[in-house]
Length: 346
Image (cartoon, one colour):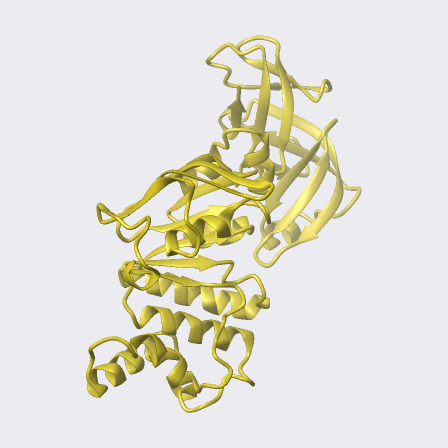
């Protein structure tokens, strides 16, 4: 559907190098990376705001690399909304339709359709000066969707919103995608990627260093940068003593599935797959360690406990478990996890 082939560009001291991406129709693809790595530049190349030095942008197998912006069949929504302050909400949404050969009735119908989709129908007669950030983002989305682009490009659309507005807008973006709009969304927030995307690519210093379906990238990060950036806490240097045993951080020996008989590497222990108990339990887990709870961190839907077992482990538990077993700081506990909870990175 949308294909980015070997795109490179040099802008002063910054470079995008040999970027390749493929979006299928209906994808919600998130481009993940820290600020300044080139995510927005890539969107602007796809939208036609920047011309690449090399490579091609294809939409439905048509080369649009040098096509005029208004003929690309893609729409871009920036973080700062860019709504017109001198126009009403209705006039903002209708603006892209002005140069299209549509009747007044057709334009009105499109405005109504996308105002309803973005839940701003009640705002159509209002000016934009006193709208909230979430409302302005919805106006910007409706204005872009009214042209029915084949692919929607989103530049940090949730970055400046509070928690409640972020949740509402996430639901809207999910609905827009489910109704058939292909989306390429750039962000530095890995939680957005988990909540919204079916595919993800991670960028670092102008290059894509890993891409694939979201579950695969988050469960099997290709290197330390991806692991750290995607929020994985239990990431350790490992010396593999044999096929079944590794020493992590030169401190603790654990049982691992070292099928490739590696000598050195990194390992990830999934925090959600670690069992915490007050007493040692009989289970199929081959790794059992006594430890001390150092910290209890509350999140919206669960708790993270930092447990010292010779190295510090991040353990994710529910509020129900926290209360039931009275897990508090400085409490002695047992930590258990199977070797299958361990991911090895060569």
